[in-house]
Image 1 (cartoon, rainbow, N blue to C red):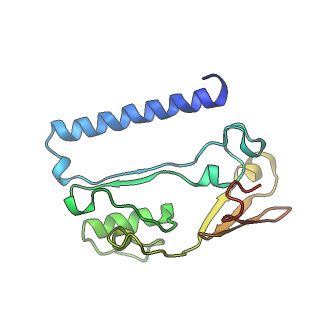
Image 2: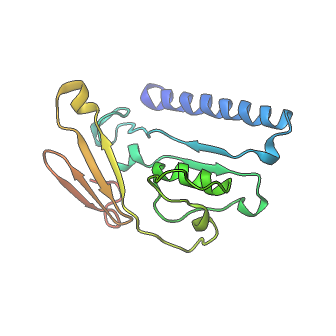
Length: 171
C-alpha cells in the first residue's frame, strides 16, 4: 500500500521481525523458561481518522488504544486476556507481581495478574491520557483525556464527551 497506511504496514513488519529476533535469541540461549516479555505500543496511528494522517496530536482511541502483551513462562498464564480497561501505568506493578517482588515504593497503576485469572472480572478503573505535542510544538492547548469503559472526556479548548457504547468511533 502507498501513503501512511503503507508506511504503517512497514513499521509493523519491522517490529514483528525485531520481536522475532528477541524470541529467537531467548530460545537459542535457553532463556524462554525464565523470561517474561512485555510488549507495549507507545501510540496508535490515525490513518486518516479525524483528519489526522498519522499520529501526534489527538487523544482519540486510535492513538491511545495500544497493544499490551505479557508473555510469561508460566503455563497457567497462557492465553489469558484481561477484559477490563488497563493502562501503561499497570506495566510495572504487573511485572513486580509476576516476579513476586514487593514494590519498594508506591507506584502508579495496578497489577493485572489477579485479573488474568478472573476473565469475567470487569474493573472500571479510569485511564488518563494526554497529548502535549500541540502545546510543545505550536503553543496550542495540550489535550487531556479521562476514559472509563463507557465514557471518554477530552479536555480541549472545545471539550468533548463520548458515550463509547453508542459511538465507538468518537465522532
